[in-house]
Image (cartoon, rainbow, N blue to C red; front, side, top):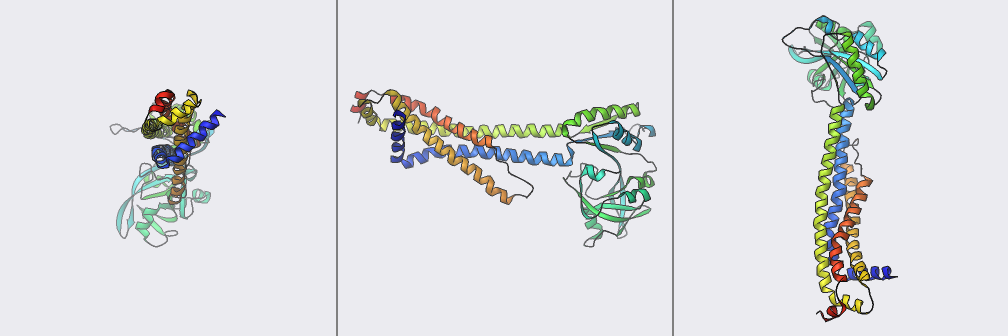
Length: 398
């Protein structure tokens, strides 16, 4: 009954000063909304960055020969189809293996030579690199068996060479050979020219690369595992296997795991910094609550004296003012959380369809608990001051 009475008195006091209560809670509203929003923004950016890295291949391991300009590497050091087959046969974690070799080349456009990147690929290249066919088709088994002179081109190259015409079925000449274009492709996640695929690239079956390079070797071998958790194990096995097959040679065996871990670490650090900034906003709002409550105690000194004179105990007076602080901070927290949730929901309509804005339930709980705790913490001093007032002195106060 005493708690119910304190709650009733606290609510009546807030009703009698609605504008003051609303203005006091504005800081809490902003702070609570900020916590939800900054965590949502951090999660969305983290999800986007990680999805881009994973689209390139977070579960990939690739190996390539380390080349030194000062020294010519013997042919026995080069990676071969047999190395690729050995990885597929001896590394259980490898669910798909492919190799490629790229070289600068020129295509003839309207009688003029234009530089392109020529890439000769083995089977599973599309599966591992996740190419998207915009027109036409990818290579099939018949293309490889028959040695058909067919190729795929990037959209940029197709637009430059064939302009508005459909490039599928048309011929393109590179060096002494002419190829039939059977498809136009793009990367699922752009690597911005940092991979073997450049803006203007041509892909052909690897069996045709020997016409240009004179050898049947691979520049890079990719191996894909079923889960990013198996990458480290597969990395070590491939490293041992390749070095045992080519003694004396130096190879780079690399993964995207380090980049992925760095992206997660950066996103976590960003989230912590943004939450701290939001917490500072709540701290400032808590100071505002304390100031207003101290003024309220002064203004209601006579009221407190009357309650003490008719038998209210110190803990009841303290409970009354703590409840007022809790209602201000808790109400502001609820409104701020609703605003923090509403903004991402509306913003979702303006974002690309493949990008989702995750709202963290933890951020909602954190915003409410921190806001309420701030209100109670900074409301304790005014409540304690009100509870310590003597009834006689309070009744004399004007």
